[in-house]
Image (cartoon, rainbow, N blue to C red; front, side):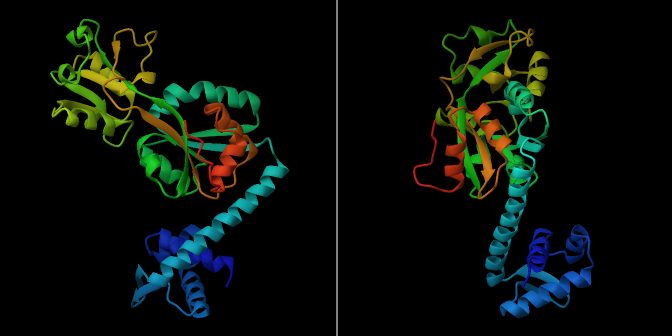
Length: 314
């Protein structure tokens, strides 16, 4: 048994049991991959994959356990390489952050600016997507950190660290009647066409939950993946918007006005997600503490190690 064989079975499973695709990703031949998998199965005394002729059609029950162990061992190998990088070049490298548009556009700029001033030799890579997509990027090893709300709290393979809570506002053109509603109510909002986030994005579930609890069916006429798009269409008069309050800036959004809606919706929590058992470079801990000062390096390391009482809370 060797690491190459473990890498082969893991890549075949990751490629949807397509041996040709796995071989291409590994820069080797299909017969070579098949041979090494067979040798591993013979040594283990169990089949990892179910076969129909020459095709792999499923993963066996013992194969699922083998793949879990293989993934763990391959991740540990990556961590060992990271240790070498950490002590060989502590202040150079890349920090890959997977996040949503709202975080990248409205929250991260001053944090990234401070980070780059402190670590001028570290390249920052921002990858944007839905909360589910940014979690998948971290789980696949394509990003070091995930920063998002919603689905990030549902990932068993990530350590989730709460950073801060936020809520929403209603935006509309300056003369819109909704701005004069005193107090602002869900019933008043439901009278107008609504433009808000797509279902997979920032805090949409809390919005739906709030209306449903009052027996209201909001008229959502348009959804988008980021606040800038929502604000554009609100400015065109197509509806009133419900967005994260952090996404409204009176100095730049001069054609719009905002009303605080925090009393109407449950607060949302933005979290940092890190793959369990991941080895982080020193500067990654520095970035986390800039973003959420209560998340010290020691606290993050305790959470990654799964130590009792390591939940930082808010």
